[in-house]
Length: 213
Length: 266
Image (tube, rainbow over all chains, first blue to last red; front, side, top):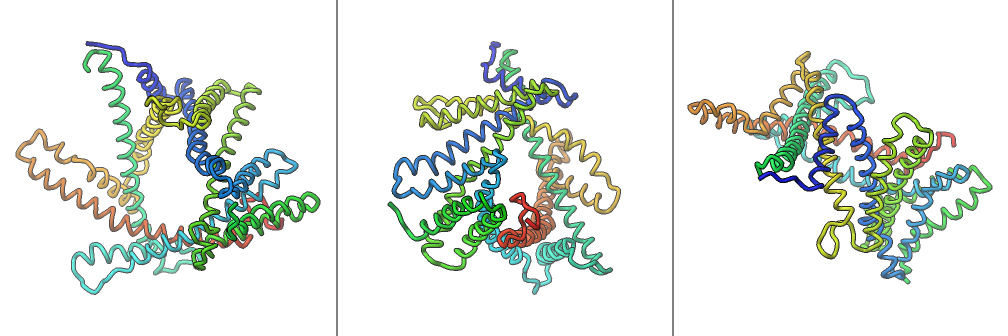
């Protein structure tokens, strides 16, 4: 028996159709949905940042145990300093907060990159080649050659000669396989999302209206 | 009051030195750039030193590095909200000047204030942003479920069409590199779905062979992802990480100043 879906379903369905209308051409319905999405996304980040970052890390610790957390007033003030850039005469004050923020994370990133990426990836590329069986050739040897040739391709400090140019070309082939695989993976993910939206439109919106569900 | 050495050191480095820097910078424009660079040196050095110097005040659970991390999560929240201020400024300017498409700026601001307002209400009322005490969804969650998620999924789903048209242009076997890209992309897409079994449905005698071939295709896809793709990813990661590490050293030493809006000589 047909029944009209709830307002939530109608909103989601009409917004989905408004977005998809862009496949025909740019139009006011799409621009409405696009602007609404941009606004809601920003509002969403306000809500998430406020409730999941500022409240548990700043407001609650200061409110519950000020003696233990008095120093949290400093990052609060540093955060406010960031907004000084909107006052042209004293905009330079925001540099203090920005310098602490950027330098700390870049210092942290330095250690993480070296210990978490460079060393493990190098260790992964150093594989035993003592046995010359099919597994060694198919996995270990190809892997090591791939890493080496890609690194040669990215080495720009010295002009390439005839040998390194050939190795770099091999590196490009490995990169092309990687980009192709990444492209294939992304396409599959996006198509899965599209199927999800079409499922919603057909199963949750149209079928109930014509009495099929 | 907690007066641990690590905390006091942080307050000295990142509150007192900046405060002195601001006071001095009012009359001496040259210091407006130098003192932030000095503060940046300390901020960048702390996580690196704390990794190699196992002192409690540096790397202990309440030491300088973890506490500074906690501090900067708060600064991060303020930095995120900085972007919102920028968008509000641009949109209100567009509306005031009646520039083309200004009604859509009103829609953007309505969406922003409604969702942001619901988020602020959740924080002030102590209900949070997921559910109310009676189990029903908060206004924030309702907007998230009914507006944000459908819009986000559809906008990303639209990319499937654009990627298909991009693939049509990129996946032409014009040269060796493009051919490799085409094969790798095609194999990964075909290997992730039971394509051969699906094609063999109208031909029952071919179904066992199709199942075997599909399994082999899956293994080939796995090998592509693990070995050639893994090797290229390793090379990219090592190269990018070394580049990022050298950039980190430049920032900490004050050679790279662009992020503060400063030129080389300033």
